[in-house]
Length: 197
Image (cartoon, rainbow, N blue to C red):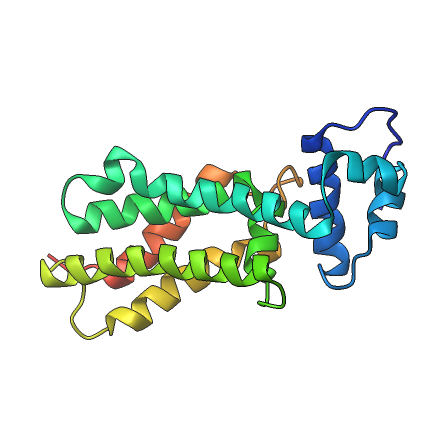
């Protein structure tokens, strides 16, 4: 990893470096020494901004979760037929994932080894539950195929969206834009999930 040394670190720039190191080494495999080397600042300078690496983890995961839960508050996620709301949530989840790629990647990789990780996993389950409720409502409305179990459909939909973190790299030559990826997710998933007119 090559990070330019900086004399002044802000909490935001320190967080960006920490997330990069956590994603590269794993949270458990990252020490304060690793963070200080990557940032090019002393450990005491890091402690000037945060209490320790778990606080950095919580800040990073909060950023990802705030983006995801914010989607559920958007008017298009709250009003109209459940199937349209569901498509909006799927599209926006893919967009937020790509816009906040390092942060959402970290969120998806937590394993529950710390209080912060357990909190993050609980919040993720809460988000998934709210989306699953939309799927159930769309099924009750007759807009989702009856031959696909709702829980399975939820897992397949989020499996497709969450896999984006493994291959999407913004700005690579010839790569699809985040808008194109989000639209492809919605078209592909809902062509299989919607009832055919």
